[in-house]
Structures are given as C-alpha cells and as structure tokens.
Length: 309
Image (cartoon, rainbow, N blue to C red; front, side, top):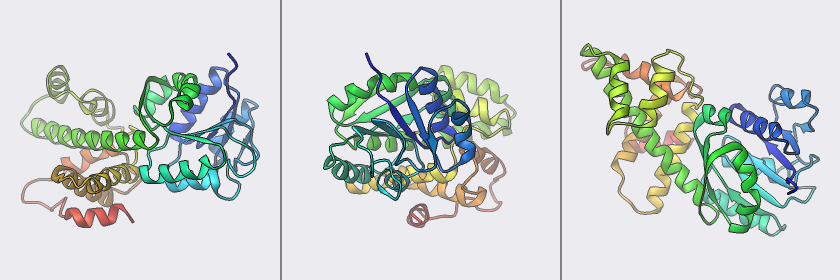
C-alpha cells in the first residue's frame, strides 16, 4: 500500500525521536519546529524542514507540542499547517485539554480535515525504542487510515472512543503516574533511612503488588543513578495533573487524592523549578525531615491557581 506523507510538527525531546522513527521506516516526512537545533538532524537527512508549517508537504499532520495553545497556533495561527495547503487528517499526539481538542475538531471539520487525539505514554525511552502506548480518540475511518503510522512509533495502539477521549484517558493516566511516582519515592526514602538497600526494595516491589512504572523504570534508571533524566519536566507534568483535576470538577466527582497530588507536585515545581525533571522530586523529598522546613505547605486551591497560571 502507498504510505501517506506526513508533516510532523514539534521535534523536541519526544517528537524528534518519534519523527525519526517515521523517517527510518521510509515514511515521506517533512518536519516543522521553531528550533533550528531540533530541525538540524532532519535537514541533514535531506528532508523538507521549516520553522513554520504552512508551506511544507504532508497529507497527514502530526503534532507533538507542549500545550493545546501551541497546537492550535501551529495549525491555525500565522504560517499554520492548515492555513494554506489541504490536509486530510490532523493527529495531535500532545497531552492537551479535551475541550480544546473538541473545538479544534469543529474548526478543522469545516475544512474537510479529520482530527484524532492520540496522546502517548512511555517517555523518551519508549519514543526511542518505538514502544509507546497510544490512546486514540476520533472517527474509526480516520483511525484506520493512520494506524500504519502509529505502528511505526508505538507497540500498543488503542482506539478509545470519539475525538477528545484520548486526552481524557491520558490526563487520568498521568494522574495515576503522579500518584505512584510520589508514593514510591516516599517509600524508597523511608526504607533507605531504615538501612535497607534501595535496589533490593525496588526488586521486591516490582515483583509484588507494589509494582508500577515508577518502581520498574523511573526510580531504578533515573533516581538511583543520580541522573534525574526521565524526560518530563515538572512544568508540563503539573499541567497534565491540572487537566485531570479540571476533568474531575466537570464530572462533579470528589477527588481528594487528586487535589492533594496537584498541591504536592505544584509545590515541588515551585521549589525545584519548572524545567527540572519529574524524578528530581526524590532530592526534595529526601532532604525533608519531620520538624524541618515545611516542603508542601500549599493548599490544593492555591496549587490549582498556580498550575493554571
């Protein structure tokens, strides 16, 4: 079968790895990014690249950008991908607010462009290895058309419902991820202070009911090594948890754990800096002791206001 041409917008830490996998598999590819450094590897391969996407080829547009505001600007703003050339399907693989995705689908639907929201889980390691999990919302026919492209970047691809559904599930997934990383980090530090070997603890937990991505990947590979380089910033992680909290309010659900986690992570972001890696919370928690400085003296409502700033 003939492979669709792709315009990939957003060649950052995750997007650059995902776009490279498409290029490596022979997909006709063009890449747009505001950073010349991000474009350089693709320019060297002789691929069409530009800071603005309007003039670049691609019947399928894939976006991998920090927020839904960036996505909308890249598609419909000045020099946007959908302002000049006809596009058949837009696939947003960012982590974005579902309401924004629905508005985007309404805007582009009037131009004959289908929209899929397909956020991914698996981090930079998954992007590099092509083992990401994609949760895809949108029309089944558009999903079927783009499925061969997903398979070049992901090992698990799940159609989860109508457009917007992927971003709902991803926000809730990141809420769960936030809960397990924070709690597993606390548990690890408690055990270390009581004289236990952290590698042994993680081995036991990963073999038992305490198993999570935190115990299997984040803590052994990015905390015990002292590298703190999982590849997700605190700023963007807080944005994701804030989206989940907003969804809970829209659902009129009581979620005290989610509100508390938003407060914890927002306080960590403010203490460490938004560009620090999420695994760096281990340094913050590890330096906190009873009777010492109050690390997380932030009310949930205050944390929510900060997260939305």
